[in-house]
Length: 382
Ligand code: BJ8
Image 1: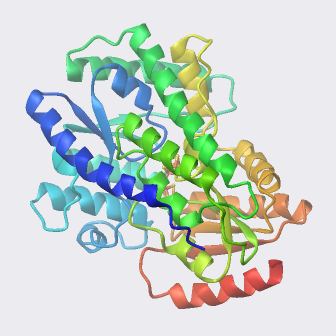
Image 2 (image 1 turned 45 degrees about the horizontal axis):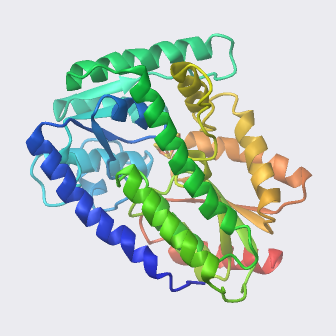
């Protein structure tokens, strides 16, 4: 189901303008940070006057170059990200256009594969690693993470030469919460039956979230929401589906396309290119540092243990969006999400919500076989 939403073109044009904007910022000396993950708070980066852009990690093209040095049996997102950096830094033709625009990568201590890959990056580009507690519910976790965020703030002050003032941090919290509210509006519209936008379209929008400047992204989302509110969607052709699992970085729309080509109507994604990126707001009534630490530490990523909050969130979303079934999507060799699948499956079973688990990479060799399984699942839940 693809609705002809004219304002989706806005995101394509905004992306092109964004690259020009970043090039110009470099000439003025503004620092630009490259990130890979939701755990790095935008608010701190922007509050020191720096800009940020997410680095590529969803393309197949850069995997082969990464496999020349990394093991083949690790997640494609790690290989694609690493390949994008080393290829760009070595002047390769596959280059991620963003790597050449940044001063530094701010990485994060999440899964083992990423952590070890980040150790290799400083040979190519300066890299700062934000540490994270691994047990978010432990009594010391918040204080530790708060300390890490403040260290990161001090690092950003040094990088930019600008002081990080509390009023600037509050302003950026306000701005990021605005973005989250705008995306909530988009996702609230998807609760309609039929939903006014396809899952593949939403995924492409969400993949732009960390490429674009926040005000541009918000403007684009507002435009499509206005358009959706005026539109009369086509009748729904198949069951309402939630995708839960690994992020689908820009360049990777494979799973969403397969599901929708087999008649499924994706209405929500529990992923970093879905609800994990915006669902929780930062409490702007608190001390800003504490509020940031609380909000970011609560991101329900499978790298955390235990990760009960994710299990609860998935069941809540499945009910809120009235889904007929869940497709649990894992990138190949992502042990964190793959193992957590069992707990998700048990929780959904208790609620009598069917689930299909798919593990895949960025290639197309398994697309037909996945399509057969997805088709059978859609028939079962339809
Ligand atoms: S907050 S999901 S963006 S860490 S898929 S590289 S976990 S082996 S990307 Fe992630 Fe931040 Fe968590 Fe989100 Fe490792 Fe798994 Fe690969 Fe992953």
